[in-house]
Length: 242
Image (tube, rainbow, N blue to C red):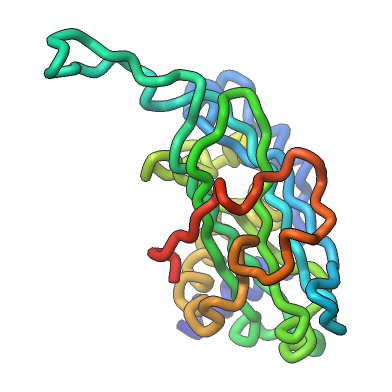
């Protein structure tokens, strides 16, 4: 693992030009490689919020999603009726959102000492051509205890629709155009992303359960959420992420 951490550290030190990288992929390449995602990430926002009268502000992460199409929208046999019954094309079911946050604690430069936090939630259903936001919270006491900044140094979001992962990169190794907002600019380089993901997969269990989706946070319902955010009853816990 020391070699992996050394590579990760050197990659993190590298300054990536987002505009230059984006310009490398032609429209033809992107369309041929993967096309549109069934659901994509439109934006990610980080904000300090006070919850339940606690003194230390929590870090709230808003992941804004957009539903494009139902990947299961095809005719399927209906044995009882002896005919074909179409799947509802207007709704996308079981959209799993997994957020990984990576912090360089204040005073730390070694990748081995980075702090990793991960959480998942599943949106039960989304209407096609609509947006929905999923919220995650990192408790203020954890932020203070671990000497974290008020937003992560690096992050990425992974989506699954009906159990199928939505690709973040094309077969050519370039970011999937409509999923670029799901990646911190450093991870638009696939080599950097692969090393960071490997390190996160190894280290994230040390902070298991600390980053929480909205429905597990007391008083989060009273947080001032932007219009159009989902109510907690439409999002369920993904126990497999624990």
